[in-house]
Image 1 (cartoon, rainbow, N blue to C red):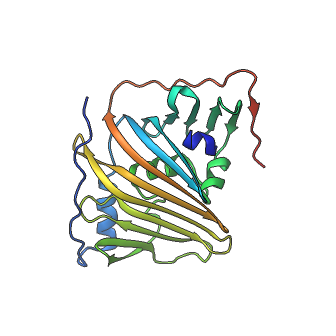
Image 2 (cartoon, rainbow, N blue to C red):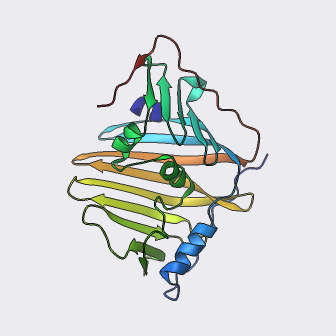
Image 3 (cartoon, one colour):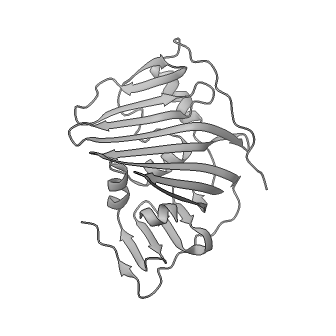
Length: 246
């Protein structure tokens, strides 16, 4: 998986932040955040992905294609590796290692340190909250010119914080802690861009900590286009060895 991760209208300029106000309630912030979820049928982009683990780092530029709520597809240069996820499955193959995976979300969940599904992965890519914000009451405060949003009743097993940008109400940061399991997931959205009058992440940093192991994934989204016809070619080559996740 680590080998895979690392092996026409263009995006406009990066959006500047506004000013956070103590006058907005948690419900108002949640309403604005949900209202600004990107609305599209398909998306294409080039994404530069760098993986950093300890003193090792590697990276490449990938092709990303999305059919919203249905498919996320990622292809390495020359098709050396491909990933395709749907609401039911996670599939990928790596030609360099002659191996493939065809299963559920356990692989991605173990990497991130939090249970993932299709909607959570899609929301992370789009700068949206990974849980339903209307499912429980939240508190809000202003923290360093972001709206700090958190559940009123934080779970002992899972602490969750969102920092919401006051200009476009997408996430500035997602922070999730599982103290008993010594896991921490943090997603920082360092900049955004406007495409067809909608707001999309540009520079994103994901930090996943599991006990004492830390992995960082840095993504730079380029050349985003929306609502064009796209294909999702995916066929596991014959003779490849299946990866078994225990």
